[in-house]
Picture 1 (cartoon, one colour):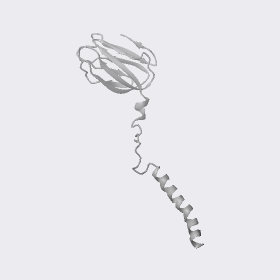
Picture 2 (tube, helix red, strand yellow):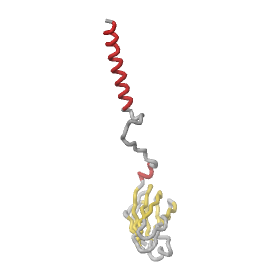
Picture 3 (cartoon, one colour):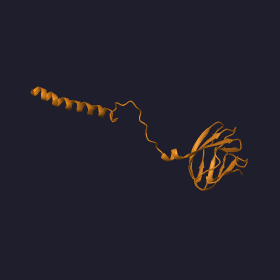
Picture 4 (cartoon, helix red, strand yellow):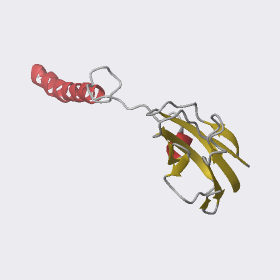
Length: 145
């Protein structure tokens, strides 16, 4: 009878040990999982930024939106013209500029806009004087010069 009692006591203990091993294997701590892990975002402010597209054609700037609220923005600048262009933003939130883009190129930059008026223009070779400029009012509408 002693053998039967030992067998009966070992059965539940063995089952508990197997169950613990299975659960530990599912915990993701071991290298057994084949599911990819997704890293957390590196900049939460970047994902909260409003995205604006600025199309720079020959001597004209077209923005993807007309109204702006104070906050973080990511500008995607696209040169759709036949000459080199860039975009510069000047105002109360500071100045920011894209790199000079050859025809067909794109670039991005981040800026935090505060309430007030901003001038947006192409700083390349007198393009601003040829009409490649506009103004935005954060908290208001876009106004052409």
